[in-house]
Image (cartoon, rainbow, N blue to C red; front, side):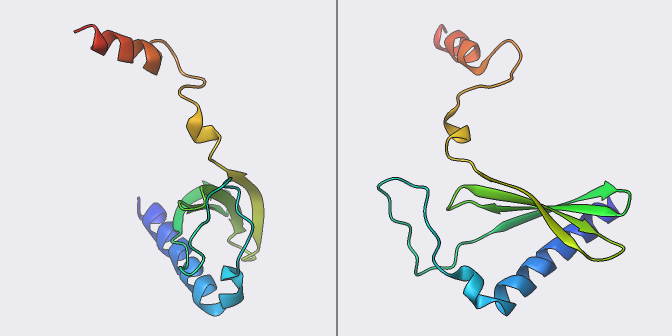
Length: 116
């Protein structure tokens, strides 16, 4: 539990240092949203989550809730190197009602509650 808390603090600290130290990183970037204009005047709020991956590695997940994008990084604790592992735009994922779920599915549960 302590490792998780310290990892989260380290991840958030890295995010703050990055956000304050590199203002050009907040430059306008293309939007995946069709027909919608994001408010570019505000700096997007980011959520950073940290996980102790064991074997001297920490995983940091950064989520941009406004852009509906998430990125996963691995940090080597021995060297401090940071590697981007994946980035994904979540809009289309979040439109799926159920995927890889066991019975009863959310649709079946909804049908049961509407019978009452």
